[in-house]
Length: 517
Ligand code: FE
Ligand code: ZN
Image 1 (spheres, protein in one colour):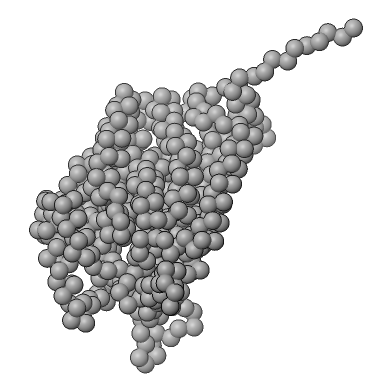
Image 2 (image 1 turned 90 degrees about the vertical axis):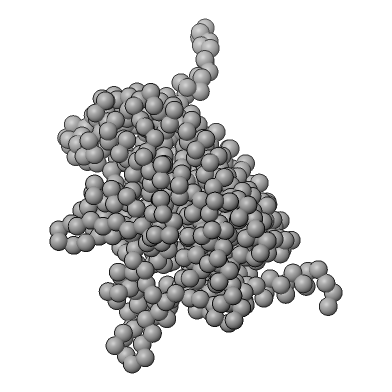
């Protein structure tokens, strides 16, 4: 008679170990360094890849089950929102402009994150991090898809969302988030993990998804609210991966500390600069506001981030020194960025406008030290100009920061009346920066940043026109040619919200939904 063997069920940790351990081998007919050419040049020393602690022990079967459940709910809500003309229930059509910025500037980054994690997942010689990167790569492509699907509903009714894939590669302000990711994916695999796992997921996503998505809920946008919450539960996993990677590097070798610290400093600043777009969305683009940018920064970075740095202090990591400047800047950046977009509203794929009296009062209450003193007078003047039929559009091309690619519009941390300006010389050329943080990043790796694709330089060099355009033709209008190359429809996608097709359509459709005439 055969012995009946009782099969012991494995615990989650053991099951996960089977998924992520013992899958690799030492190569024999090729050198390991040739098979994994990228995980050493950054100087990070790893002695034992098996010491990697899997941050999320999610097996494939559990993963698909869990994600499929979220997907079912998300698409049910998107469908219901669409069938009930949910877009007419938003606060007002100005809100859609925040979504335009989201789909052109943020969703393509999710896709870039997908590609980045796929690449990095190939290039770590440890299996644990490779599997973790693969899981995150799947999450990221799902994020870009669910965001595109949720927002496609708006694309049927509103302007400016028709060509985000093309726009992220060309449009001047979209080169700010894009250059952040270009920088990350062209770094080594360990730096990528800090750039995305720490800066993008921890610094940025927290501030983007939590307050911004509550903003979507406040403004009646169930589509964006649902994709936001559906993505946010993945983000928690992604942050854990970023932190695990930081701890892993720090525990493996003391020589890794200064490298990791430098990356944390660099990517915190890179993240903060991209976040100025989010600050502007929160303070100016949500008709019904949730909290100010300053409040969000205090809750999600100063308090939550403070706890994180306390945790990392035992490894010798210190709070990045840029935080000192951010603490001063947090009362200014959203106003400065909105002023910039207002002026350059002729070359943006969304509408801009001046805040109403009631909105200005909200801003002075939220920014008692700065709004009335520095920004209200400027906005009042621009409103007067507009009332006289002289809506101000700036037609000059600004100088850009070589690192973050934001026009030089931010002020000195200690003097809000003076534009901040820094420069460096490298191989006989001059490079310009918006801040000490950006200058320092450049000075550490000038050979990388001299290659930056700066939209303004590219326009001046004639690279931003369609191929059949003749810039020497009489009456040539360079601005119109650039907009055409962006695939941005002049007079429809750009300029002031007041008088826009979006404004007119929304008013007419909402009228039809609520009246019988
Ligand atoms: Fe994501
Ligand atoms: Zn900069």
